Amino acid sequence: MLALGCIAVTLTHSMLEYPLWYYYFLAMLVVFMAMAPRGERALAWPLRLPLLAALAWVGWLSISTTSMFWELVNLYVPTGNASKDKVRAERLIEIVETKPLFAYHALYTLDDYLPVNRDNLRQKLALEDRLTAFRPYPDVMLKRAQLELLAGEREKAEQTLRTTLASFPTYAGQFLETLGDQDPAWEPLRRISREAYDKLPAKFRTLQE
Image 1 (tube, helix red, strand yellow):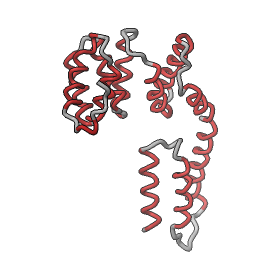
Image 2 (cartoon, one colour; image 1 turned 90 degrees about the horizontal axis):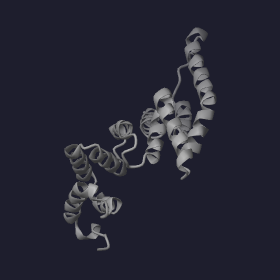
Image 3 (cartoon, helix red, strand yellow; image 1 turned 60 degrees about the vertical axis):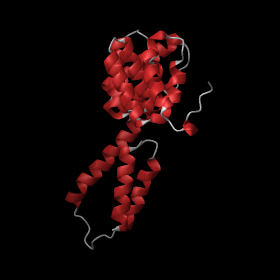
Image 4 (tube, helix red, strand yellow; image 1 turned 120 degrees about the vertical axis):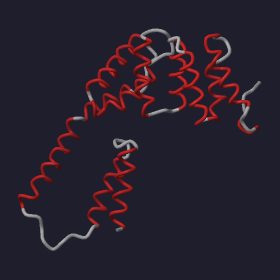
């Protein structure tokens, strides 16, 4: 039972977290499997073939996707050069659309390449909607609200931000800093963030005012 429990925890954690980053958890699975008692009879060769085929497939998959993995590593941080980053963003979008195995990693990397402006607004909104469907982090949700506001969807933007602050109230101050006080376009979002910030306990109200 101990071995089975360890296997369950390992698989659940590794599959729901970041499998490529937590390889050592999966490697420990081999150890736990070795701890499990085995029967006296060995599997007949015909019954071993599916297992061997699965192992061969996993090995081939690991080798064949190595280049894609390193490509994503190299795309992880924007260069700061607008023309280069445009090409890199287009490549990430291509990966999202054509490489299901790497779409998750490409999509959250792509978020750093999407500036908050009206350029390609509908495309950026669609990408942010896909990202927030499984990664509703505070900074990502704020960007989504900003893009919705730029698209003229004020009620939707306000609801997005209220939902975010309901889950992450202590981010209200950070949101106020991100939004700044210069651009009047962000006033509806500033107002909501200010309301949430003012309700925080004193120890969380750390803005220099």
